[in-house]
Length: 480
Image (cartoon, rainbow, N blue to C red; front, side, top):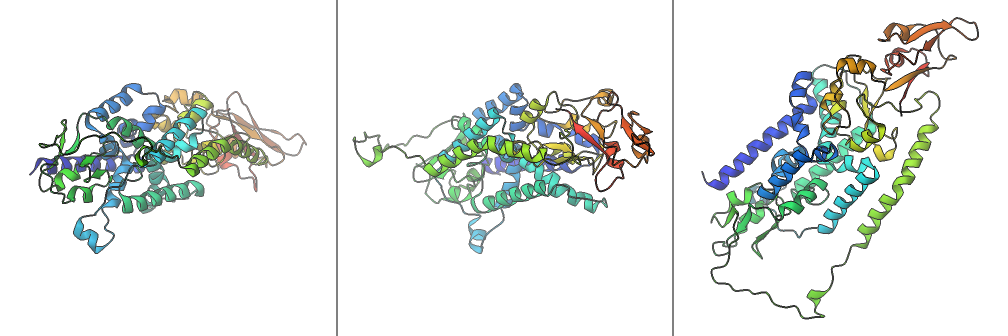
């Protein structure tokens, strides 16, 4: 077995294992197994950046500077999905030519515009942009909103898709990424993925890189046809290190051994070309023009963000008394601002919530923070002894809690509307802290529920069992 084939097969094995573990992390129902796999989420680039894990993030940047974009080719789960989809042939000719690609010039304008936009939105607190473009979070939503319901359905459990918007986002993300990978390989990684663009800035100067020996190369274009990053230019005998995802397919495909993964740069044995000075005023000295449409579109998105936030708050404020005054978020947050800034909406807590109460938000937290988890007490309850979401969060948006800490961690307060209460006492029976009680009605007609806010922590058990219709008599309001 040649060195190129050994490197390629080793990379495939590692990438397959990581893809399987990431999928298992989002779909497994056993709590112990999920907690043992949480390291898979904690080594992803975007969660590391948002949790300020500078040591681990520095290790990744150092590995990229040494070996190239091995994160994209081995650890990134969405990259593994693209590799699988890109292997689907489009025609008989593609069967024969082994998935042919061709060199495409880099779209650096789009790459770095997206990267700058994500960085700017992160500074401004517009988390929805980061949530949509982070590859790990996108993969997590696909698993939690599409794959997990299928797994539960086959297991015989009742499945209800509570958030059609989250399902639509996951479906569209998977469809767009799959179509792009089927047609253009790793085009998503090299255009709209902020993680790929960031690592590309570093891998451009990596110690180990792919080098083509022009004295040995016969121009058969075997390497170019299998390069899913479309970064090999045989015209110049150059591999674009900023876009190369280090998959080793080119090394394995070259019949002459002209392309190698090495630290050296090959020089022609007989130099034929020399650098020449470009004459002033020639066509080659013209400045590169910026795409006006892309520039204006990016500016409009950033400028419209505050208006969208105000519209979302206005819509949520006009919802009436049958909805909470403020949404309830999972326990373990230090502050609402830190939670909104660090959460990427990956869906890991949603997928593993045993009470089935967490759902991706739509506009409850504002459009700028869509897909962040919120409580839906009409569908489930925040279990009194459960701390799973705080233990699984990879970004630090939720801090780990012990069971005793969870018992006193306040995420909301229940609020009773006496005119709707029928005095059934269901909320009194299920409250784990004895915060609800039946008191005489103000009108002197029967009994109504009352809440002791000093004891209530907002678990939502009372709202979940309230039989009042069409609107609940007791609703939990979140803590700002």
